[in-house]
Image 1 (cartoon, rainbow, N blue to C red):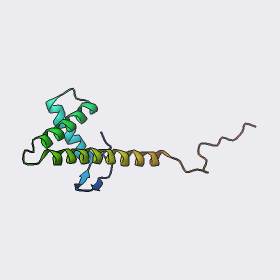
Image 2: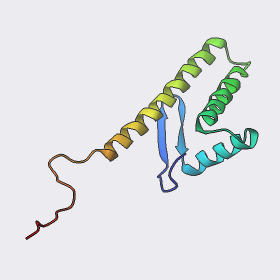
Image 3: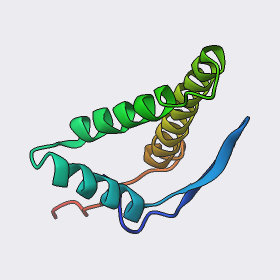
Image 4: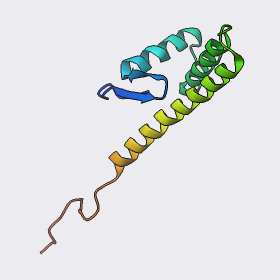
Length: 110
């Protein structure tokens, strides 16, 4: 899912806790899902994560439904924030500075 050389990312948004994402965490989660579903690919792993989030939130019987709905919206927004942040970082890494040439120069044949 992620490069092992990748640095951990920290995110904080509203009341969502400051969390640390790492390649090891991604691998651990994927392995846990694959123990349950050996044929799970990355898309299925994400479905499990979404289902676990929904199940845990739905199981909060001491929390009023409107608060659970608000938290679901916040969690979905947080996931979109993390996705957008990563997409922006990847785009910045692939963009080459303007005005600089690249490639190989080969002298002309005489």
